[in-house]
Image 1 (cartoon, helix red, strand yellow):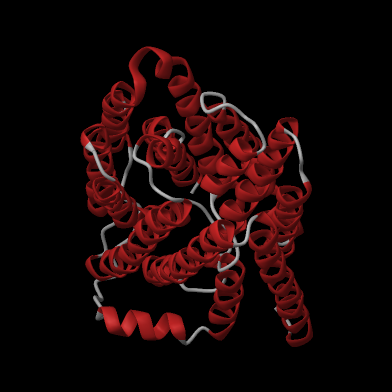
Image 2 (cartoon, one colour):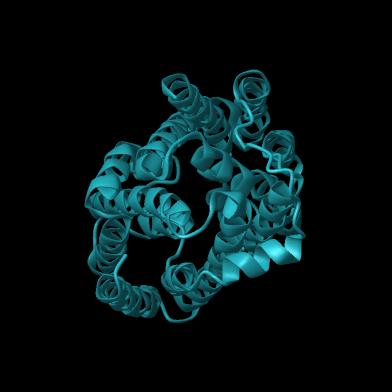
Length: 393
């Protein structure tokens, strides 16, 4: 048993390294992409919201399929490998884009790759450790992942004056390829085949039958419908007077806060309760949105970035770690797929609405929309916790 636990920790660490190098590749690109779209290609902020929202939604939708398929075939690693390989191969094609629709096509391909890998990878992490240590496992993975998300923007910041958009986009292939190599040689399959291969529809029905999981998922979807992504923090920083090249440092602050909080948030969730820590993350998002609304100088942009990064680090760790608490292990892939589908649809709504309101009415209307949605979700999450206590865990 001790050796199995050690092997599971090694698997989590190896998957963390895969995510580290993948995020170096991704964030070299994504830290520049909003500026490339709006400044270089002349796209509007509504288009930015459309590109981010639709691409992410499609990626999240694919996670539903890949998660259920991994339960069906009782294999995780092949799908994880396909997903990471696709993302690594597509990002350099941003360098060839001349109009926003071409950026959109490459962004979709990259997010589809992420969609293919994410649910099976999260299921593989869950299978590598016990449920009681899921918070720590996902926290470690998030911290390693976000270490790459710090290094990536810093590399882009250093290389951009020398190489421009095109050179940075091409160079992103190198760390992406390193991630695939680590995955091939160091990550091991952990799902113990049961010999029973239920239909995909049957697995989905079994997950939906878990009423507490569905209720919690509805609350997370409601919150996510108001939770804009990092691109709008970067755009807000630019509006506050941060220079285009320096916006990459704002992105590094977001990812730095995310990396620092991931593992402590996971440990706290294991000890204090995952639902409680999840509600804390929603409160931190609420604070970041208020700061978006009231800030008036470029110095404030760094504070917004730090608070937003803390929110992301807690929420993305705990939301993934909480899934094994409410579903059986043979349904992990399907449960993570359904989780990602709901979050993705909500993400699309959030970014389209926030981008539209920002363009049409300004930061006041956009921020107030997110503030109201987050308050409703926080109240609903407190109600969910009260229901669990009354009925017994």
